[in-house]
Image 1 (cartoon, rainbow, N blue to C red):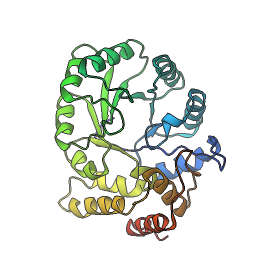
Image 2 (image 1 turned 45 degrees about the horizontal axis):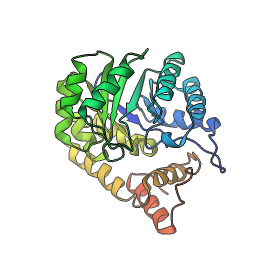
Image 3 (image 1 turned 120 degrees about the vertical axis):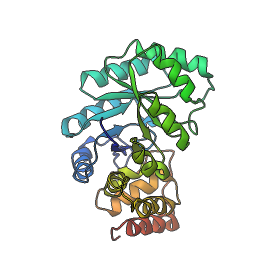
Image 4 (image 1 turned 90 degrees about the horizontal axis):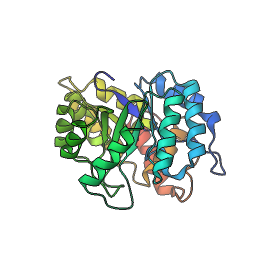
Length: 284
């Protein structure tokens, strides 16, 4: 995990009935890898991981591991802690490079609770762990101060995906010695410029754009590329996961519809996706 990596937050392929469709992984992952992504991040927010059963997550990861040629990181957090332990053990068994654990959701937890929770998970870890901090979706926030407390007590956590959209935090996490990844498309170039990486939904449908933005981050002309990233993102005006799926379809990589309770895009939202695809440099 050296340097500013670009990883897509993988879309999970479904068939028309909303069932997991692992047969779509070979083409999808091959397409992403051909664009130069450095790894894959499975079953996070973009991957609708919370809608999947534990059995689906295991089956999906096994399918990914069979065809991936880059390291795979898998989000294993679940509302049921025993299920998190089991998914973490399974990730180690099938050879994942690391497991990410999303901050506990629904209930609000303070720093003391988070430290206790993550220390307990560390005691069951058989592979490197990453925190996945997404305060907008979870009701908990792993601050840099809380991360520092944890790192003083365990060496199991090696990195963090931070989706707080706080640029200053990336420096603080990085200075703790963590491999740091932003989940915010608007911060991808900033992250790369300070040696951090990115794990984004946009990379799941526009991997070439995000790889180029990362690789060009240290160049004097990086601002135009950042604008292209931001303006592509802004054109996806409908529900984000559905927009990413439509963008993939327009680019010839159909990963199927989203799962309920997500709704289909409206015609106006579909038109916005087509504009984003064209703006990113791909005719639609």
